[in-house]
Length: 117
Length: 117
DNA sequence: ACATAATATAAGTATTAACTTATATAATCA
DNA sequence: TGATTATATAAGTTAATACTTATATTATGT
Image (cartoon, rainbow over all chains, first blue to last red; front, top):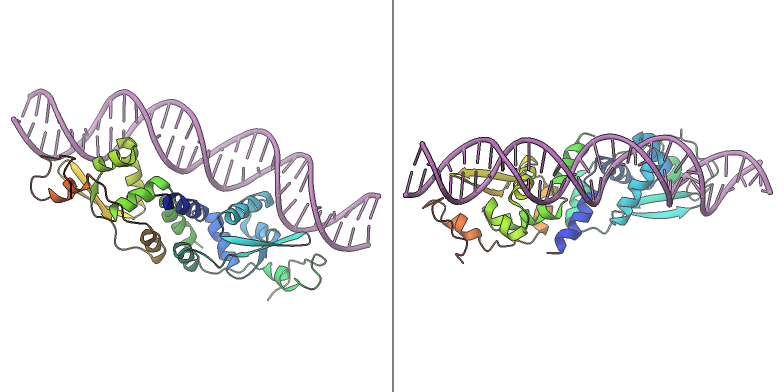
């Protein structure tokens, strides 16, 4: 019955409203921590700590690029985790675009928050 | 984004190893608290409290019959909850049978734990 | 009515969790 | 090199969680 402990860890990672919101944002694509601070109205360390939990649980993957860290959903999930992610609606972070679009170009130079789709 | 809070409540209910085990036992059919105390090696109030959490989250349903309370899985679940339940293996409580079989007959009279399948 | 049995509630404890603020690390830019 | 920016870590606080033991409630059987 060790499967139960394994499942427990993943479900714990997804049983917190803040982390579920983080996953909702990630459904639209890569996001970096700075964006989420604004949107969730919690401190930067709080976001950082929650992202770590999602990463440790295998829910998300990270990619370092200069000073930024970009997070994305891990596509390989057991069905019960995928079902949870599917249930969440994709939510756009208004400032998200700068992170994603400026990616390969001038990363880290102009990180304006006001760019819109 | 209130769906997130709703999901959080249900996932919290299923993110604890003890409660996942309880659900595993319920997959084989109705169980009463006294049976689970023996199997899980935790106190009767602990089982009672955990069952209440599962009930409050809508994961299980209860049926009172004399002094006993019989619990069963609630079949109507959102897909992400059902996926979790599906992932769990059904585990039989060795003493479970007395509860279920003696049900309509001599309920509450002879609750021997040693009856086997 | 009284004893017994199944479950519930109360109260206490130890652990975990989710934040906070302050500070450290690391990469980039001028 | 020194300032700036993104993220990480440390330490502390508060609240929630999962048990425990003790006791109360409720239904049953004699």
